[in-house]
Image 1 (tube, rainbow, N blue to C red):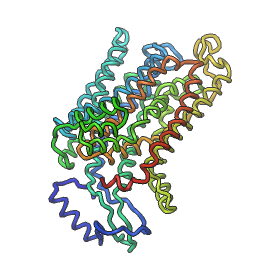
Image 2: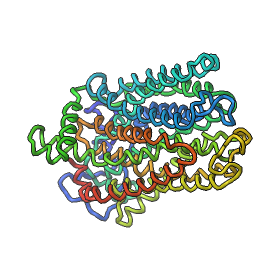
Image 3: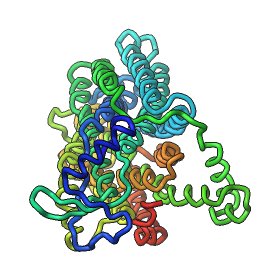
Image 4: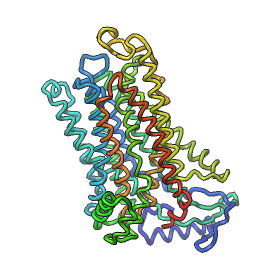
Length: 526
């Protein structure tokens, strides 16, 4: 059940609902294995706070969608531009911004756990996001660009928006998950008379899937942002995200008394940091336990909670290509009047189709066939989907390099009439890249986030979730080191190499961690 009131009221309501639905508790009995497993009831109020992260994603995509063009091109190029710093610089800043947005959740978790609590920290992040969006809008106006304020304003706003993102992303999904307090399976009778097993783990999987679906509504901002960039100016795109923040502010006001919130307490970050330091120094968590310097139970809990985090940096390097080099790739193709940075719209569109498909068809079908799609398996398949996406991008890049008029120097000065003629390749060939990326997010990112949360001890859920997100930062740091080769014709080799490394990563991850599938149910009860 979703607990949105006081503990006493929730217990009474839970008891009444159990009686009404003819539910039978099996705390000390074996659940019949032949019964169908179903998701528990989830109150829609649980997702109200997700509107804040929807707005965060709206802002993120309103910035990252036009940012490659904003930095790379001048105001006189074929594609919209402003700063004229080139593809390598644009790709590097894109990776910096993405990485910063996923490093700051550590600080957001500390603030929430030790000082303000989750809900107030989300309020703080909202205020900082509004301030950063305002600075970005003001410094992208024509007079500001004429006076050289474009780049300084961009960097200051990216830092502020990243801080706001950290306060929001580290607390929204744990706050949502905390509203569901059931941990034991139980049997109940449906109105049809069928006896089913209410599966808490399936319920959390459904909650994370729907949460991912909601925030992907915000990712659709790539469509209006790209059109405003093309038809009006960059300032119009940034103004759009600034105005959108009125919606989450309203949602926070409405939901301020509807959530179970925990009072701030001493953050376990110091203790966790000590364990991680000793882990790096001595090579393994088992060595840390042998030292006796830390509580062995705490070390084991941290170890199992971080299982899904370890190889995600490679995944995030590949994911970062969709906001940077893939946008630049589209600029060298025939766009038929469509903004080259708008093709990313197919990522959230794919999510809207794939999440219900997975929830209502794929997962139940596998359950009926006695083939449960457990988290480690889902993450591995997600890695392979990402490898396919980048391999396909390499194929598109090869097609561009073998097409006229400029072949492997697309938008070259002479062959393209000073950058006005792209190579003769249809930009819609990029759509499978974004569809496969969306599938990989659903399988790898959402499953990894769920795994990190459900396997973390109660006192460490924000920290472990934040550490999982910090893996994005590690991936972005590695991506920045690749930015010097993010230009024609070297980018083809970059795509091919990343795809191969992603395949190897998927294999290594499966070999090292598939054993955790066997103890999944046991770990969920810990």
